[in-house]
Length: 237
Ligand code: NAP
Image (cartoon, rainbow, N blue to C red; front, side, top):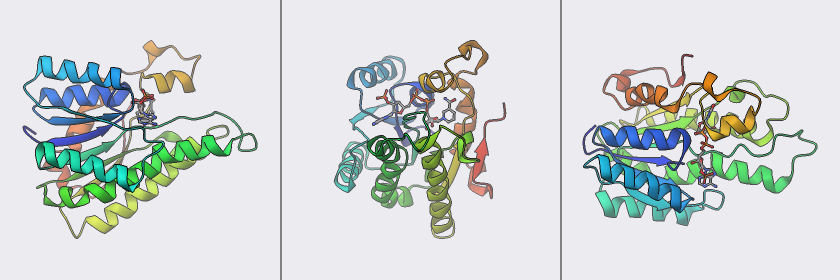
């Protein structure tokens, strides 16, 4: 993994923060994408203080990203490293928990922009770089509510269904034409602020920490996973 470059969206907290720190510890140069400068700086400083890797912060609000914004992201990565080995589309917005009848259009659009549209426009821009990597990887983040729709989960659930579709389409397009592997991964219940918002009555101590997920993510970037015929995985709780 040493000297590889991985883009992680939503790198400032939760699962994205943990993955950024853990991948840095094994020599990966992590591109930290997020919208909160202060917390991104905190992750950056910790990486620089504890590893000899070169992280890069890309500040971006994924609610508003378009093709130009995605091109800028790719350009910044290329000018900093001249390569990209993988992306983890981790950022997501939970949005409002309500019936569809009460769901606001703007809120629906924002959730879809962050959870789906951003991955579409960024994928388009980074594909040429990933195609030149020896084992390029695109990792999408799924959820239990992408398997069966559930009342009150609105745009979050619908967008995760759509992420599943995007992952399957990309995999089908890329698996016979490139070395890129596409995985869609459900981390299962994990102790983060999103989990606490969705399940406020739950005791966080009963939920695994994000660090428990790292071995699965490491495997996605391994030589072994290059041979995998399976593309959807779920954390084994
Ligand atoms: P989290 O702690 O709330 O992290 C979500 C990340 O997405 C944060 O970094 C957040 O940044 C970022 N994000 C949200 N809106 C953004 C925007 N407009 N622009 C840029 N970044 C934005 O949640 P998490 O649990 O770690 O979630 C990580 C992934 O795991 C998500 O895809 C989620 O759907 C999935 N997942 C989580 C669980 C679980 O139990 N935790 C279960 C299944 C799936 P801000 O701090 O700026 O908001």
